[in-house]
Image 1: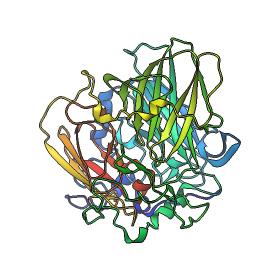
Image 2: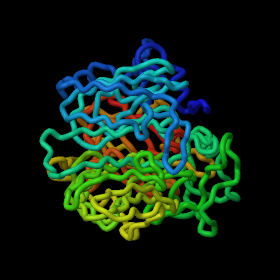
Image 3: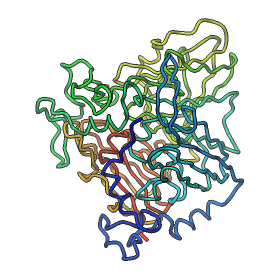
Image 4: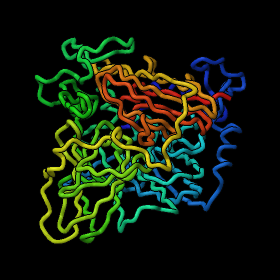
Length: 535
């Protein structure tokens, strides 16, 4: 098994660690003074600072839910006769679900049996900063053979998930659902089905995510074509669309990767994503760790009301999801309730989650996740009665309709962000191109010492300006933001190529927080930044 190599963009922060949290190793800030000789981040709240402890105290303490999680090499059965060597939490894919109740204190011990350092990030949770799981920023990496204790209050119900924030590790098998139940659950349903979507390459014919990243990092000349605004913010030759590949079939580039066959994808396009759909040609697409040839089957009774919690844990793939012969009622996105809306199909970018309710009919029905623009599908089955199961290549007619996207949803009344003029606007220009694979924010690749400043109590507006010809699912740690016009509360939102998306959040959780593209390969190439609270 190939050993993961940390990307240089993160390695500098890790190597610079001194005493205490790695956030204390910063050399400077976006507009502030250099760090003090003691190593504390000058002018910024430290992840283990008194402001963070005070915020956690305000969350209160509740019953302690103790969990042990082991990151380890594992052989994983994907079904359909395919077994792969990868890394996982225990021997399961996805990792076994962590379930708590809002108000609990989660006490989780991570045992690292991998040959390299790792971490755990709690995607979507507003938690104390020193538990956020970002090596080089909020904690030291958990060394091979070591363990680490995470302990924090869990205050908000919803559908979340956990994964490493260490290199490309998330694109292996290191992920698991995190479900926070509502002690005052307002929804009525008979059964619950947690559905995790993924694109899979690790261990297939010698491929690893690190090898895929190394291949992509070489860039793609494409005959001198201009594929978008680079770090200098240059003009885009194709307007708001993706790479101009209309004359090409969807295929992989011919340049070899260090291990395994070529995985660079060309010609995958999607109108709903504004052009280019993705960079990586994955050999498999999974629902709950299974290929379409041997799908998971969820059983219920005709007439049951089923709550389906959908999580996109993919590295480079948006999924269009539909349940054959049913309409879905969307109730939540990214853990927060929305005004209910019915749809035939949903679009999930990487990191996004949706909860839907379905009153199920009698029979066997495909839950199909189309890899948007990549012409492949993942599959699970819902069985409520007799009948033959559909084949692996089934395409429900519901997939033909335009999928519901987050911009059409409205926040439910109880969670809508109150109207307020922003105190501060941070403009985050998404830059880079497939040609050079130089993804960045404001033309600057990730540095843990460079912070975009905010102050506690501010209403902050994030203006994402996509100067590339690629779509980017942008994720903010430790907070939720509101989409414009009373839109849904989210922590991850798709920013289409050539477009501007403004979102607002309240700065109510002090510390140093990541903002990044949730395409694993874009993030590891440098499309990450830090939001820092002023001390």
